[in-house]
Image 1 (cartoon, rainbow, N blue to C red):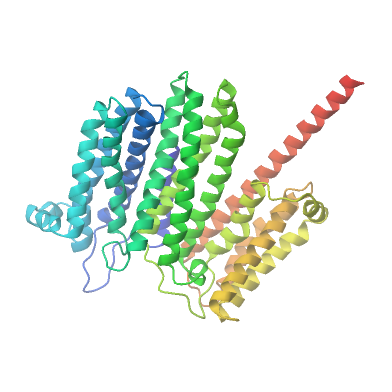
Image 2 (image 1 turned 60 degrees about the vertical axis):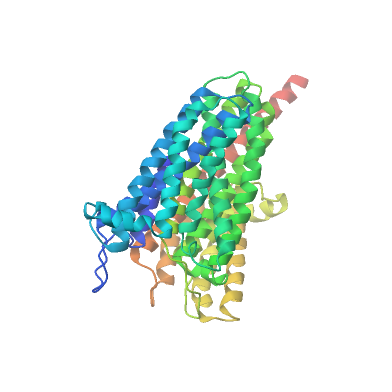
Length: 478
């Protein structure tokens, strides 16, 4: 159920980018609003169903060396959903390309013409292979048949890499391959985690084996995911400055922050839950942490579909401003993940805890100043963007450490109140973003601050419980 959070995230981002409203440009075909809403939703269903199919096949057919009928049945059912989304994509694609209504897009002549194109051939191959997976998922009886069905599922899961911004063009082999690896890694990680959780809920005797084996598989998937994502982003972005001055770059930054948070959760799984996988408490810890992982994965999937519907930037030039989303992600979200992951040296915590308010003011001043300085192209747009990003993360990190101290609440409240003012100040002259984009970015920043307060409270509670336990031991020893 946590994956469903990706739907409102997807629609909200696309709405702020004005991608859900019919275009009124004279001379261009008008894509109906039903298609503008339906196509990204259909792609989300396709990607989620593909991930679940891969996960259920891997866990149910290969991970434990024996077939798990209930998981393989779930793989067939998810493959049927995947197949339905692919079939729905045919009229949706025609409607978007030709600006026709959905009923008119079902014309057999137009459909047959689409199937003669490269895009149509890719869709046809996907439909055929996914239908095969849906039919054979129930028939897996051993490793050999499981491998055959899994390969039949891996191919259509990777084929969307050929239908992206540059997948069908020449000279983009690296981008296509990296995106295909990225899609497969996402499917294995997301779908595998859901499948393992489903298996644990069956209370099997070999749950610890499933947890340990999937932990290794997830680690490999994360490494491939991070590397392929970095390579693909570098191939599509024209310089580092585009990362902080465009909506496309802001979406990549958001995905990177979420990936970092997922890596932290995964590491805690390996350090705490996996060693205790043979016990009931270890299994419950796996399920509890997996709930948060799946929730973040749902957000990441929603952002991924929104990214696929957003054109890459042409390149940053002098005069481009840091987006409100980039300011919040670099100054608040990334430092929050760093501190949560354990990046809080004791010496710096003592230094920042005494007077946290100045660090809140420093963060606000840094955000406002950099929002004005970077567009000037001082020292070059690219170099200025790198310096600005490093400065925002560093000052935000100091603020986050000050905020988790015993006197940190007033500092967080100062930033909560003044952050919208800082965003308004940065957009006061020649605004490059819509009010809805700034509002969404401000809301995300406020959510990060609330999460910082929650993390601070959990730290304080853990310290109190630790001190209480230490006092009880001293009394017993006495």
